[in-house]
Length: 239
Image 1: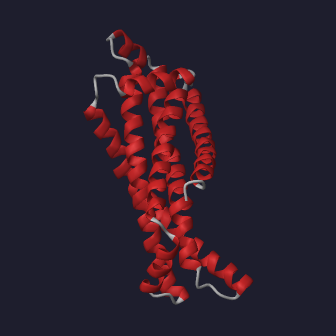
Image 2: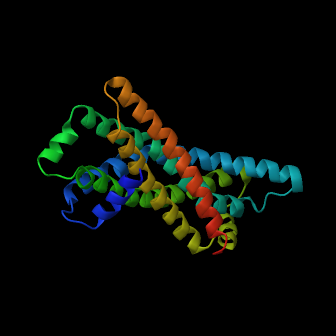
Image 3: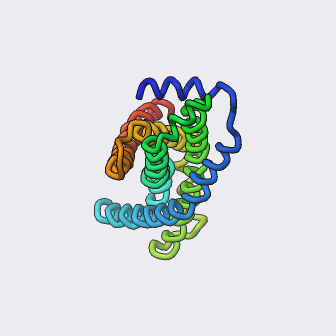
């Protein structure tokens, strides 16, 4: 893994720069995942608002601060982490099975015989696509989450859109969006590295590909949660 990380870092700034592969992978990461992410984060936002209102009424008999607290939670944690975990399940599994199949069918060895660096050809475009895609998908999911939270606040909690935005403005700062984008980029970068590592080390047979795919989803999910803790802890000193 350390060797793969080092080779990928060198490949990020070494020609040839494979723009065609980058845009193909960006389409796979972004466009193909957008509907799934938007659908899931909407329900996550609805649950967050309703549960926050219920418990706040239970404890202090007032839920006037629910929009502000929910907006902070959505921007700082919910949108980024849900987006990353969904990407690890879909994109990570896809990359692991694709690279693993190439490994066991000796396509990776064929690339080496043709003088093509597998890291530069397979890992680097996927890494850049996941970093860029993760960053923008996090922003889109954050905006979608906030919109869904505002709609459910209007329908079930009696907050107007003006009240929701006013409460959100008191709690949310622009740097929350910047920090969310940083998280999305970091989470996105983890997924192809883990997926390609298990793909390159895939064992022969369908069982080997399945094991590589499973390991990718598990390890990348754990890595995302650990990195989320590290980044959240670091960002507390910047607020």
